Image 1 (cartoon, rainbow, N blue to C red):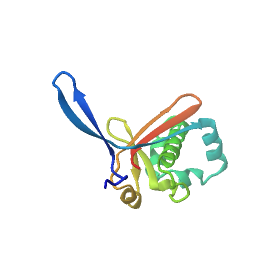
Image 2: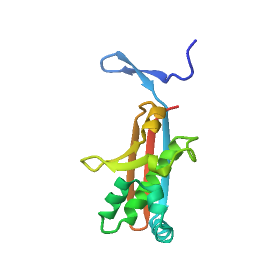
Image 3: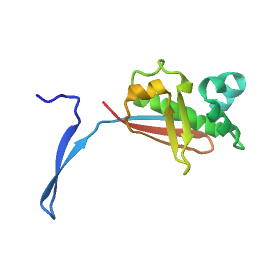
Image 4: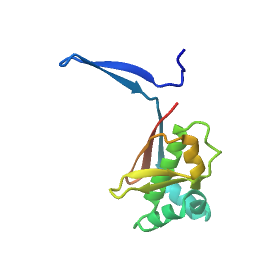
Amino acid sequence: MKSTKNPRKIAKIDIFSNKCYNYEIMPIKIGIDIVDINRIKTIANKRKNFVSKIFTAKEQAYCASKKNPYPHYASRFAAKEAFLKAVPGWQGKLKWTELEVTNDPSGKPLITLSKLSRFKLKGRQIELTISHDRNYAIALVTMEGR
């Protein structure tokens, strides 16, 4: 009897070589969020602890290095929200600062998780894309999983 937790298997036949290839399909979780940049700016200016409660020191330093930090705060906030939507059941169980949005040397955004969170996800592949324009920031997270 097969376990229902295993990924689905499919076969693909190459019509030119008449060879059959087996593939495994891994379910994908998706989370998306859009944030009004002015809303983040207003909250950050009204609640002095907002930035330190939501963003790590590294995120704060990155955003503060920009001419206008608010689009960068908003995109990181959207990324954290999108991640939580991709991982059902984690909302309210994870501190905002246990998720950190960084960039690799090429500029690609990455989500870094606390050690405990990484253990719970057991090495699943997480992909993040973020963008912002004049008024809005958006983030999309995809993750392998069940």
